[in-house]
Image 1 (cartoon, rainbow, N blue to C red):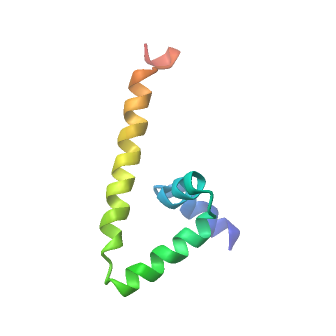
Image 2 (cartoon, helix red, strand yellow):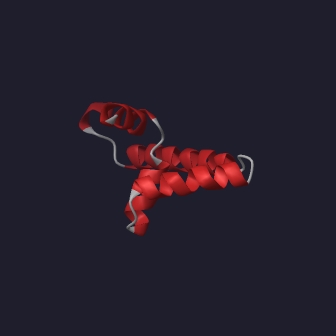
Image 3 (cartoon, rainbow, N blue to C red):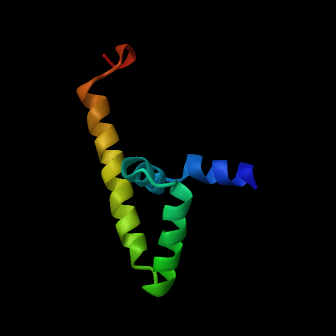
Length: 73
């Protein structure tokens, strides 16, 4: 079961993990609340999740171009 969890965390966007780190809450409880609210609101938090994932990737992309490594020069 842990292998499956690590695989999903590695290949998913990591939105719940980042939110958990910033708010000092465990990522598993955030995932659980996300699942509950998705069922209650018929999946509308999925849109919020995708927006946050897009925002995180854009921040990562912009940070990478602001501070290039030696191989990217």
